[in-house]
Image 1 (cartoon, rainbow, N blue to C red):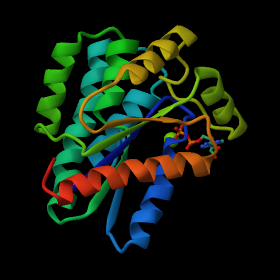
Image 2 (image 1 turned 180 degrees about the vertical axis):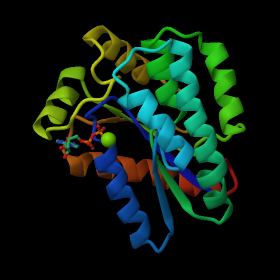
Image 3 (image 1 turned 45 degrees about the vertical axis):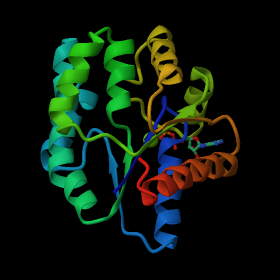
Image 4 (image 1 turned 90 degrees about the horizontal axis):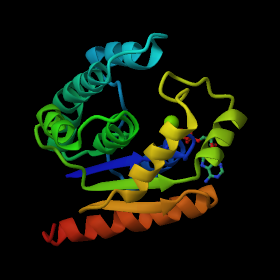
Length: 208
Ligand SMILES: Nc1ncnc2c1ncn2[C@@H]1O[C@H](COP(=O)(O)OP(=O)(O)O)[C@@H](O)[C@H]1O
Ligand SMILES: [Mg+2]
């Protein structure tokens, strides 16, 4: 089973790294499934439209449950079947985003959210979570340069984004690796692949 999540604030380079990882695994002959949260199933895409696309504010818990509804459906319909088939699953955001945005950013209680997330995932935990670290201003500048249209969460104030970044920086635990994403794309890719190799070696030895 190879379930790898790429995390980090907006403009950190998640989507760029994910595309590279997919190509790198495919070059090794692995079958790769890539997913982007929230989304990836009809139900999850519908939740995405509401949670990111609606111009209205919503209750913090309403936002949480929309994200978790999307995650539950994605895990059930796409991620678990792919892992069961021996495929590599690469996810652009997962549980750590909920902890960064809805808990650290939005102020919901950590333990309650962790429990609700376990319900959504059925306890599925990534083998590796790559956390890309960039200062808030650099992420925003990269997005501006790429002319990305901001969604509802991206339009939150700087205080919100600083709390999100601090939560990412504090993330720890088995399978969590931090990468300095102010480096060149090549340096980020090399660092990410070293982490992938480290967990892959552990799991083929049956250590993890
Ligand atoms: N290491 C990097 N150095 C410079 N620019 C980068 C780097 N990684 C990504 N970018 C650029 O920054 C922009 C945002 O990258 P993206 O992968 O879409 O970020 P995210 O998915 O985290 O929001 C893109 O234009 C991308 O080409
Ligand atoms: Mg992206």
